[in-house]
Amino acid sequence: MKPAIVIAAYNRVGPLLDLLDNLNSADYPKDDIPLIISVDFSDSREVANAVSDFKWVHGEKRVIIHPANLGLKRHIRFCGALTKDYGSIILLEDDLLISPVFYRYALDVLGHYKNEALISGFALYSYRIAESALGRFSDANPRSFWHLMQVPCSWGQIWTQSQWESYEAFLESGDGASVRLPEYVNFWSDHSWKKSFMAYLIKSGTYFLYPKRAYSSNPGIVGTNYKKSRAIYNVDLEKKHYQNKSSDVSLMWKYDSHFEPEWECLPKQLKELNRGAPYDLDIQGGKLPEEFRYEKVLSANKMGGELRVLDKKDFESLENIWNKVEGKRLFLGLSAKKRLDVFSKWNLRNRRYFYTTTKLKNKLKSLFGIR
Image 1 (cartoon, rainbow, N blue to C red):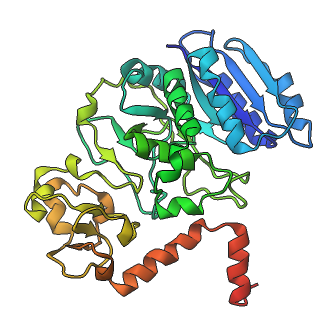
Image 2: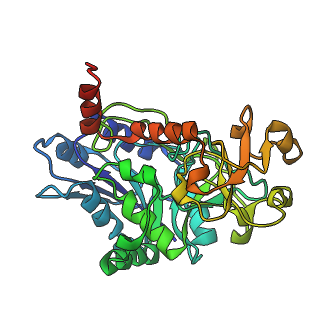
Image 3: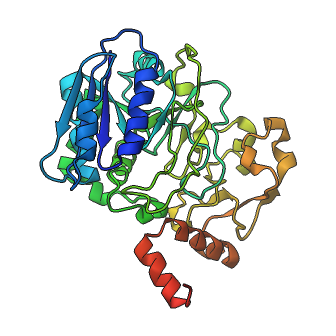
């Protein structure tokens, strides 16, 4: 399967030209790669003129100039629908950085998993910071190059036609209204299409597949979702292509929408902490009590009625299975709402300010007399 490259562009001509230059310099198996540049309407013709002048040296170039503004969500849906024309696409927003071997990776992952029913999309990006609570994140599973997450990727992603059509059917059904999203997601921009796609992943019980190494990066350039430059999600890019052996999906670790590993994936030593009974994981410390499913939780927040307090030595036999655990204490205790330590609850709520909109930030500043 030969995916087309699709760029969703708007009004950032500088980053877009950098991305286009990087695309021309990347490694491809043949010079027959379709490039589609979809430009949403803006008051300036600068971007439209730039993409019209751009010479794509690896195949056919198609430019789509929208006569009216779609907005980010509708624009992404338009781009996703191009899977019907090309079978599969690599979607890049105009502010991303890409690895020179991103296309080789895309061919690799599609060759292995394009028909896997559990997967609803493929990421080029690889998280180092969890969006849920801004803690360090890495896949701890040594048995697979890939891992599965109920977190959609918007910083370089691959979709097949069947994956995209399943998502569109979900949107048409209206089933998303019944899905409870993590609280941190409610602080995302209204322009974010990731909210509905996360609801789809949760409702359908499917996942985005992520690599351990990054083939795209988000430098945090000012745009529709970022009113100020924010580079915390900028990651090192893979420079060489490694032919990754296919691994059975059953060997991959699954992570929920809070960036927490699912209990079923844990090594035996961790499962035995609660005598083999399932418990919630809140290693990031980003879940609210009402988001717990089980009676017990292993959390970075202090819980009432602790069964056990864990520290680094408890994980030495597991090769520090979460590097973020180092220097932290974890509490295995009751997950009932009334059991969450008062300070931990305040600290958890306070972190959410990072995700507030500019408008709400200004209200908070006004309330406390901050200029």
